[in-house]
Image 1 (tube, one colour):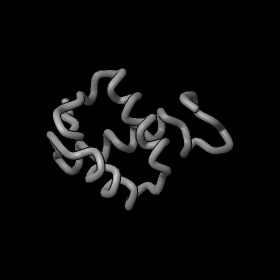
Image 2 (tube, rainbow, N blue to C red; image 1 turned 120 degrees about the vertical axis):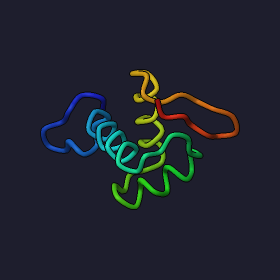
Image 3 (cartoon, rainbow, N blue to C red; image 1 turned 90 degrees about the vertical axis):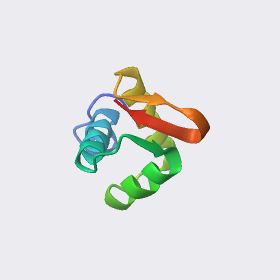
Length: 76
């Protein structure tokens, strides 16, 4: 679900995207491997991997991250 859900906002991509942006900015990450980011973020906000990937897709669409080589992502 991209749009906020009043009963479960924690599964919304907007919400998860905001939490992931907050995590990336607070940890001062510029480039990180996809699995490392998932492991670290999942310790704070446990979510399934497919929901995490949809969140990354959302952040890519809005221009916050870009793909790099060998599974790494670059935070803009």
